Image 1 (cartoon, rainbow, N blue to C red):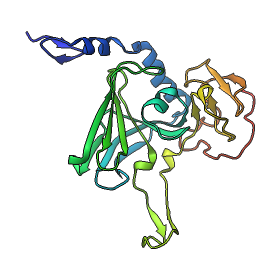
Image 2: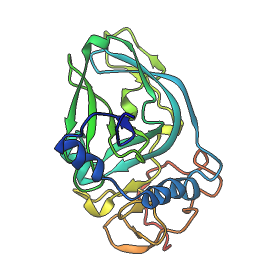
Image 3: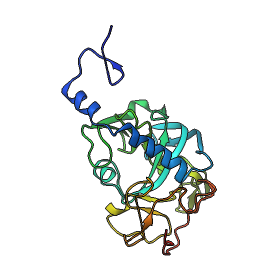
Image 4: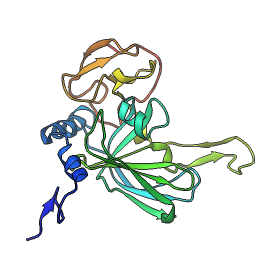
Length: 249
């Protein structure tokens, strides 16, 4: 009988594999993560992504994504900033399942690198896929088996354009997927600067009882399901960013 390691058949695990497989979040914590998204934000179900096309910035690497959107938010976390984001905060998507992305063009340009030991939010390893021609990060997968999602970014997808799209001027405009609009801030206690908008600001993540903050980082309440504004589901939740103080929760 062949031995297995973390569910995969192997002859003998390396020290790094042992460290990686041991460094996972408790399954009960992941259960709270997924349940919190369903009860807190996606009270009417999760939107489906059906073969949505995207590309790197130079266009040599194309891909499509099929799965379900399980989160879209402005991320302030140290982990993202340290390893793969280029802005603070970063509009961030979680899409399930983990391997929801298929390369449709320029597979020879697909490269990857591995964060050998994640710190701050998650545990284990992360594999970052990118375009070798222009350096665009495409997605991130995690070694923790319960972390069954791909982390990606909304501006890598293709949207309809209008106006002067000849390329001769600067009057072209492009759309945005409504379901991808960030509807809350996460890890706000780790922010680099205050964000003066009306979106809910979670001090950490979306577990019941954790703190909620205002734009200045003052604790104004705690998370309760569903979060205010999400009673009718994700697509009906407000996405506006008019500066205003959040109501006391």
